[in-house]
Length: 112
Length: 114
Image (cartoon, rainbow over all chains, first blue to last red; front, side, top):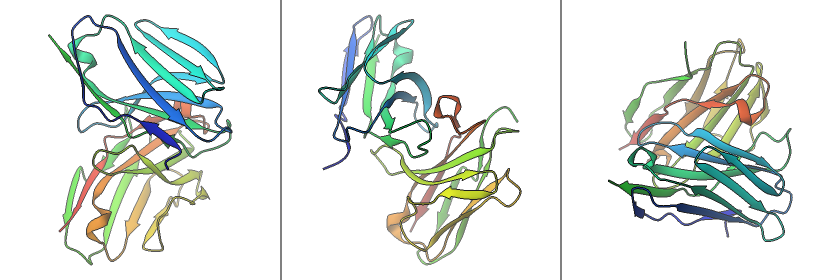
């Protein structure tokens, strides 16, 4: 079993919809949680970063972490066609840990 | 340069050959990371450099893989006796202090072993 599980999709929604992306994990030592966006044939770019449990909001994006359930989510409001990409969750155990563990990625398409 | 640069963008090689993949990090970034991303998968950690030294090479799959960063800037990932299973996108990232919140990824080198 992988340390981080993420539904690969694909997920297709109409423009303007609220998108929910999720990951589960098994390692209780994970403390830092990230969401990356990756366009086709590009490197991942950091979208959101959360430490421990709680919510974080940045514009149309909201990241949630529930450490008790080992479950993290990314919500995208008012989705746009430009949001079409693969979304990767990633996590590591502490600030000094230099090995990020990624989920498989969810391929998202926003239809105009 | 403005970002992390990786060359070549694409590399096709024959099984058994030796390849070198280059990463030019953002100027001044002391931390450098290599990841490998297979088709339909998330990136997998290979190695982390702080300055010139490999601080964590626990992700290198076997002794055919080796990476160097002799002057603390450019890094080269070297793969000997390539196998078809080595086909993947090899990603490089760099950060100023080793904090992932400041890390930037390159566009990757797509390696195909035929």
